[in-house]
Length: 275
Image 1: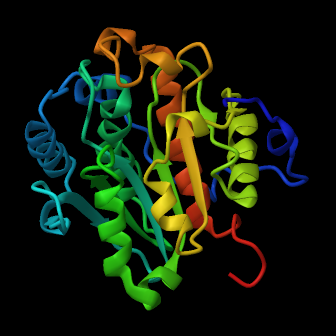
Image 2 (image 1 turned 45 degrees about the vertical axis):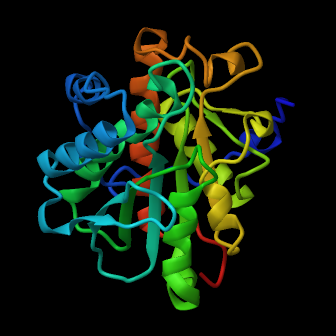
């Protein structure tokens, strides 16, 4: 059942976020909405569109398809190397199910990945980022299971966090507090307060598992960004999941919050002692 649990979001940092430390290149609202409007309906078209959007964003030789066991379609992966091999994974599934367009679940989330890549690509990075459009989340998290399996033990140890985007755009940004690591939620709250952007803590267990579950199973810290409430839950997997249901002001604010959050994670200040 969806429930509001505000405790993680009341955390305030004693030190302010230094703008010079949090480096990213904001993308225009026009470019964010152009990718959103590139919505494709079939899953094969969605995979092809994600390749195109990543390529246009400048991923180039770092763009690849990763086969997924038991699935016809691959994960679409864009790597952004950093000075260190320690990695931050940013993921969203591109497949849809149900009678609607799958605009909210989950074209809205996955269409942000190229913009987030662009936001970080023009600045030197401390950490390696992997932006991944997962296949077959709706069929049992096949894409994320495959990715985590291929990491192996050594690769999994290098993943400091998995940031999952699922079902954005129904309203202001939410964070899934029952599926997110507390330290990651606290820093998301710090970013939202610094930027004066809304962020609420709300579980969305009733929706079912998302790709972050594959990472938690390997003890990798995760954070889930979404926009679902008790009032909007029924939109998912229904004919109401359409592009015209997306609140575009809220969607753009979600992009701004997440872009700044990723840049903050790259500073290293979000990790517990010893990381």
